[in-house]
Amino acid sequence: MPFFHKHLLGIQDLSKKDILTILETAESMEGISTRDVKKVPVLRGKTIINLFLEPSTRTSSSFELAAKRLSADIINFNRQASSVLKGESLRDTVENLEAMYADAIIIRHTAAGAPHYVSTFCRSHIINAGDGAHEHPTQALLDAYTIKQKKKKFEGLKVVIVGDILHSRVARSNILCLHKLGTHIILSGPPALVPESLEKFKVEVNYDMDRAVEDADVIMMLRIQKERQQKNSYPSIREYRFLYSLTEKKLKKAKKKVIIMHPGPVNKGVELTSDLASSDRSVILKQVENGVSVRMAVLYLLLGGKEREATD
Ligand code: CP
Image (tube, rainbow, N blue to C red; front, side):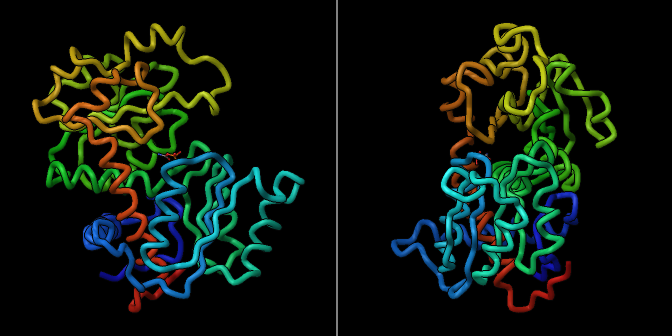
């Protein structure tokens, strides 16, 4: 399964075949995490920098575990404990880290386009772990992997994404990914957070969540991205919850075997009830588990595949 990319900057750059190659490779990685010795030597001798200039629990720790399970050396680097706090620029930070012979740099940054910028002057492989409101490609890949695991197909599925679509890099990457895989996508949320212009991505927009979730196979709930909003985009949390929180009553309109997804962190009682988050229809922790296999696949395909002929 050849994979002709040097970097993973966004789903935008991947073909359907690339996405399926990553998902198939993740499947072959899955068994490693449940062994007694959770390690294979395929990336032995490689050095990876986990450069997180914005907070993370799931992405940062699963990239670290993924690298360690493939026997790579990984250094975790966050804003609070670095010279970025003393004013060092992104370019200087990356050039200094790369001078220590890094093979790959995983980067999360508040600015959209930061990983793309870094890829213009770095010789290492660059992996986007979330850039502003732009893309979060490994989240979309692990979401697609989870959907495939649960539904065995993409075409013909109805996936409803609810919440703050405008500021969500998870939504953007998922829309791009699921569209390439042939699913029918419906977006729902407050009009200020789900602009009609998104229909250019060939999705359906329905502001009435009760209607949007009718016959859904997958409901993906999103967190309100307060840190990226310039002003309030809905009258109150109470009203938001009334209209766009997933409840048992709304869920009844979806298909019986619907799955509930959320990239985390979940605001229980806002995006969905605590009961639904831990119900047997929720795959939220499965998404987290799958994140490790998918990130192992991404690291392996970018750094490890012997037959890989990387191109910029
Ligand atoms: N889903 C996700 O990106 O979570 P973290 O912010 O905890 O990495």
